[in-house]
Length: 255
Length: 381
Image (cartoon, rainbow over all chains, first blue to last red):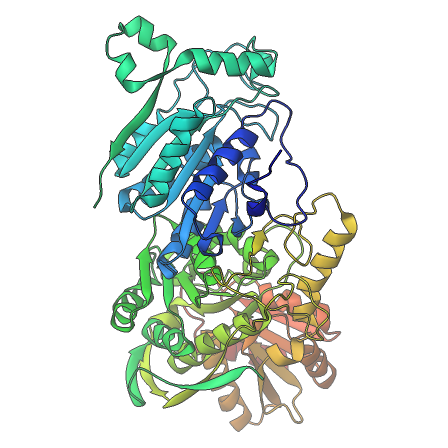
């Protein structure tokens, strides 16, 4: 078996720190494939992340410059990097809690400025690293470590949020849609402006086992069944749509 | 020494500036080309001047969404290779503390000017205070060191901001200019030199950016995009930046070095000024705006024949404990007027065996000369 992507991994890094069944390893693969297909120069890439499981996707694994920052602040750090040296390609890879809850203010303002950052939000709908507490992205009714009776609140629609705030490329795909996702990451890398890709990534350890998706393959199967493309959703009733997760490219414009 | 002399972009000679404006010019002279900030009284004029000056010079100015974002962007810009700063006041300084711990732990040069107002909390936004001295040292969690300087004039807002950048680059540490509203808003004559000496962070191809055997214990710092494949993290890391959160030895060694690199180089950082200490029986120790009032009072009392001297602290952290110990051995009493409830007085007590008397004031006003006169006359009896 060839290991074509190994050249993008920092020497000395062995294995990933993710739990068995975690979607973040698949996402890591998809990001590196997009970088490989575009022949990006890793010496000019800076990967910025916050705190949480997803923040470990680039740090320290990716063999470019990595900046592993504080919880919630990845976008603010990335803004400083990009503004001071616009020649750098700055990609922010972090989780839903990091980017949209504690870092929510930075998310809307970075989108408003339409600053040229490539943001990949690995959404596992839960605080994984700290033990599976409810997140701003946890579906209503889902059980977590802090909502044993089910989450009483609605989740954010992150794509609509950043679109309203001013982002210029917005997409959502699951790790189970590799071709579409890799294409979206490539578009984001080529895009000039604030791009945001929400990537649904399963967390069997903290989310699945509390929500009757006990095995990793159950979560993967569920994502495959529930994720449909935007255009496929057109003919569905409101009830049918509620069962699905709408994916696709929602917005793309150049300044 | 990795310093160089550079021409200042602001015209050489005498200028009539406010302290906040002078600090901005000091930063520009030092080579600051990134400012990320958020408006807050009484520091806002500094940000406004930086917005104008950085546009003129092709630097980067950005008004961020809050102070947390401001200091975060400053740290990001510093790793991208820039000399970067922000300015704020108490509430903003509080918000920045977590990221300042990040800057200390990742050894990121950056300068923060805290134009102090009367706290705690929102307090008196337009009034003066000096209550952030302990916060500057202990504001973030864990054991770390910072450098903090204390300007007493518009001239020193320029000089010490320049010095703050040089120290920050040299020791790779967040450096604070602990200004006070009274100095920030003061207008007086100051002079701009034709050339200033600036320090640039050292670089070394392939060097370990987070560990060193150098005597000064400061490792080289490359920038993003230079092909060094930097791994920067606020988690415990080895000399090359690899996360080592479960290795107690790596953690202890790192914490020791980021502390010792400052403490062992204390003599290059600490600055004090002494007045009339020979034959003095009482010494006033003061800093910032209060040192102006104190020196006036001390001069008057000496004319009256009182055996009194004074020490001015130009730097506050690392604490000038050797200088304080020396003074404590010479005099019977040390008197410390300051615009807080005795923060620096308590620190002097740790270093001196003699009697240390605190004259604290927290009413949002500068300490009037009469108050210091009265206290000193009472004590000398």
